[in-house]
Length: 303
Image (cartoon, rainbow, N blue to C red; front, side, top):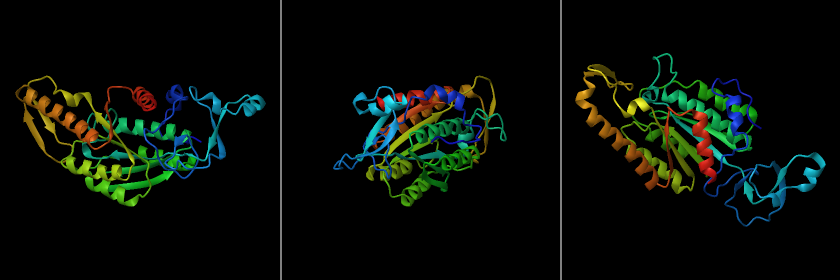
């Protein structure tokens, strides 16, 4: 069952438009309970084990017509060779995720706030299918881990922790990912939300390769604020680093072309690293409403 949470990032009215959509995997996975995803265990007996609510577009041959005739509700029969999803939402909590915020104390409009809305919505959508959701908070280390679970109280705990996130100045994330890998043993889905503005980018993807070697599915959601792609117009600005890099005074016109070239190179590097390491990649603009982003993401996963 979906969580009953008091998180300000959970807008059930906005998510109502996605009621019939589900998060699906691209590869076979492992799980402990029955669900709607294909299992790696292909030699099962195919014994009936449970029911799940029917979603439009599914094979009607699997519909339990007797239940439908008796109750008027459509349910799919689940068999032993199906399994649940185990998904860990990993969130970059570094200082650069504060970019776009109104102020140091008001993170409205920041990349972190966008990630909080999106991660909370994903936890709701995933748990709605009785799939397990966990949380990993990443800075220069593994700040916190909530192991995957499916109960409403567990999902509420995940959402409450997402709501309480505050950025930490750091320029590294690889060590946190390595620790996350070492703490887990089960294959599943790692969904990483980050702007990837870090010094150890190659090491980050070396750590993600560990998850891929374990045959986990790794999804990269690359968050980009539109103001990062182009420097502001004006004669003089003071640019302040969000990860204790100091300040610099300059005219944007003097560095605009070089900046845009380097930022474009950064975007291309993250995408190339993702795809070459077997990760699914999706670039996300924080200018797009998170519900629109989530809808497109879910549609793409089922394609």
